Length: 281
Image (cartoon, rainbow, N blue to C red; front, side):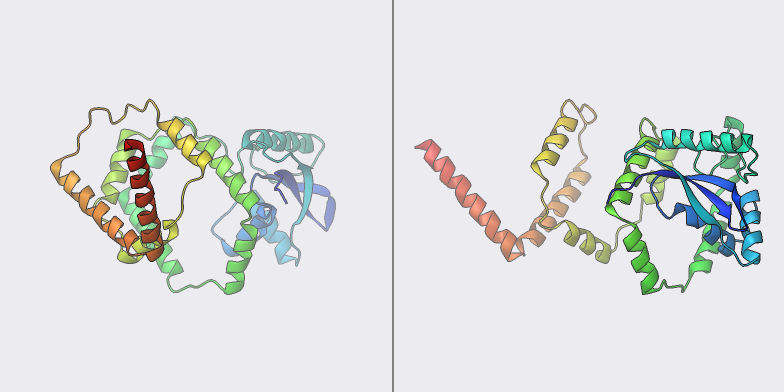
């Protein structure tokens, strides 16, 4: 079953003739139910929507979901946002008391920030603030374990359609964007001196061992690399060459330790030598 994005409304069963909130679900079918969950779990969030949800929850009810419009599979987030905006404006025009804080189209946010706001947010997100928020988050989650039932529910909801839809959204969001030199330098500095554990290396190796690219994937990679000039004229240092050599030797030794792979390599070598001898004759 393929996922179709949709625009939804939240209503109170005590007042079913009024839509109180309009939202959109670009990739997650459970999106309409996240508001009630957030209202119960995170009391620090204060908005018109959260206050309305908590009010009816205190009276023993939960928001009901109404699908306003289901769109075709593969609908872009931008168009879905446009449809959401149309519903918000239309419902407000005929008297529905919506709790939306804006005209929609941004998936729950208040729209694009101005350059001044972005600068203020960056300035406030100092290393000290990041460290404090990270420590609080770790302390809050320390020792907590999710139940098997919760894990199974998450696995069941994360369908192939959801993965494809999220991938499409990420592609739309990141296409054309380039990281600044400052961002690249910060990411590089953060990664330096953090070697992967042996357990992590083993998991990564086992996950890829024996896997091969499809012919279509090979053709796509080949096409993307043709004409690549990024490394033209670049030379590795002797230290880097030595490190790469040791890593390749170790990788090869690990692969050859597998009897199946060793047999495949041996057979491929024999076939290659037989072909060369036949060609020479």
